[in-house]
Image (cartoon, rainbow, N blue to C red; front, side, top):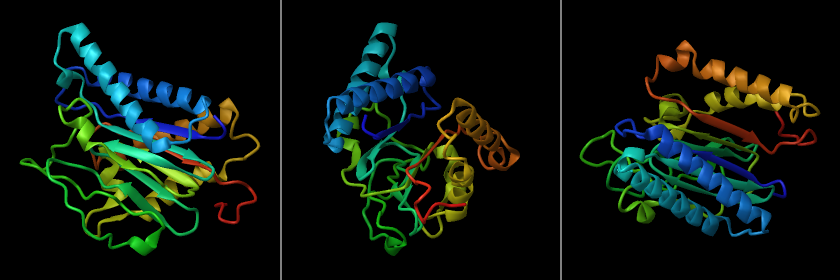
Length: 257
């Protein structure tokens, strides 16, 4: 896959009957589809992302028909990022957030969590914080906590795609359960200290061993302990998922020590 990273998060709807099944099918389909396309040498990431989302939606609908249930019973959100050494693309439908860094100019969100029916684009107050900016302001409908899912009738039209992320060094994808820790709603900004703390163990890891199973398991266990800690559980009663990835190298002056 030529050092191209594929990251996918899907969060099953709390009101759905089979949310884990729907989210599982969505993640597997998107990963398999993108991996195959990248192996074939495709570089049109934004087009691939849309195709992958459509394929996942088709698979979930087929599963619903097989089980004799409604597609809504397998509803989930979807966040995807495909990133290579020179940039990438991202896709999102629903809440949760994708956050990126260029390694030196701070953190910014790629998509603001989407909650409801109507969208409003406004200037990003933190535009100079990083070369990236959020693309869509939260969509709020009749109920503040509503969001959109890949199984919705109009899901394809509601897909949001960032075609050019630019060169980035760090990326995080998370479900809405972590939004209260990761975002500052009052200032519409990203909470930088949260991400510096999250990435510190990964950036401090011995680069010669970071690809070994033992090191990966150790880092994953550390992250799991944090996500199940009182600090997190006291801020949310929702499921929490978090993916962290970095492209930093030892000879990168921006690498945290």
